[in-house]
Amino acid sequence: MAFEKEIKEYDDLRGRYQSLVVDRMDGKEYFKYNEVLFSTHSCAIEGNSFSVDDTRELKEKGLGMIPAGKTLFEAFEMLDHFEAFEYMMRNVQHPLDEALLKEINRRVTSHTLAYRAPDATPGEYTTTDMAGGGSRAKTRHPTWLPATPCSATTKSW
Image (cartoon, rainbow, N blue to C red; front, side, top):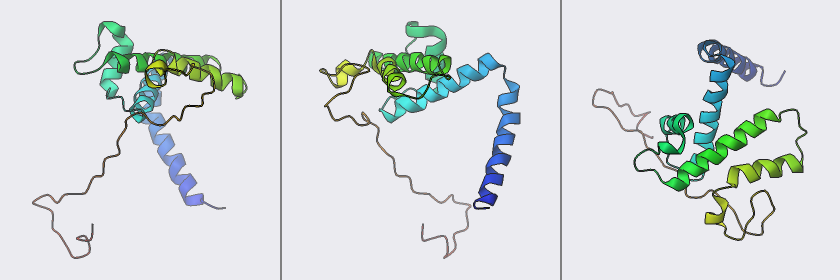
C-alpha cells in the first residue's frame, strides 16, 4: 500500500493527541478549544494580531475585554468567526452546497467586510479581488547557539 509508513505515523500521532489532549476535555471544553484555535488561525491569515490567549479571553468576556493594542476591527473579526464556527457545528449534517458556503461567508464577514470592500455584501458573490488582508510571511533562518558544535555539513543552512 502507498504511504503505509506515513499513515501509520499519522495514526500514531493522532492517537497520542487523542489521549494527551482530547480525552482530557469534556465535549464542551473540546468544542471551545477548537473554536478558539480555528478563529485565531483563520483570522491570522487576514493579518489579525490576536494570540490564542487573546482569542480565548475575548470568547469568555466578549467586547468588554479587548486586549491592549488590539483593534475593535480585530475583535469583531474574531466574534464573526465564533458565530460562523458555531453555525457550522450546528449544521454539520447539512450538505456542503452553495447555500451553506454563502451562509458561512455571510456570518464570517458580517461586521468586517464593509471596511475591506465597501461595495461587497456578506454572503454574496463579489467582483472585488479578495486576498489575505495583511498577513506577512516571516522567513526565519536558524541561528547557532554558542554551545552548538558547527560542522561542515550543517553550515550550508
